[in-house]
Image (cartoon, rainbow, N blue to C red):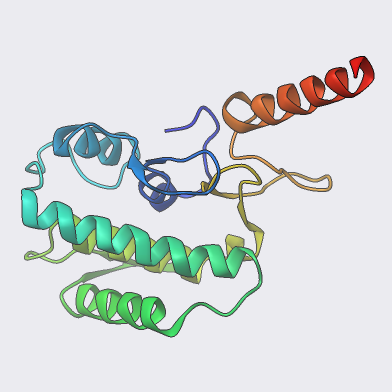
Length: 183
């Protein structure tokens, strides 16, 4: 997880990649237990949830990349690709079909049903983000593919975290200016 909170729990999951240059080639977790720890810390699953097995890990990574593709398009004010959008729609519908509804003052809560595992919990968290008023504030880091909700009042955040991408970008720009002056 980045030092700066991305603004919604599901974004912690979508940001589990290490990727300078917008590549999304390498996971930022070493194994399923490390991913489980990230999901627990983000409040997406409980500490008692079993560690995902190999086939479940594959399904989670497919969900992560489809969700990233759709949310990245939304952040850029583009129409998401039909294939990823349809995959998310089917995943969310399946999770909602088995979900438990909680009627709370002023809002309806949705949680994974008795058969729901990590996949359903993540799908329902994604559904929550897609219905949130903050979705219009969704941004993608200018340096990497991490997504975040920009709650700033100014012109807007450009980086997922200053400590992760902002400082690197500024240091690179400084070095380029120094080389140009010295050249």
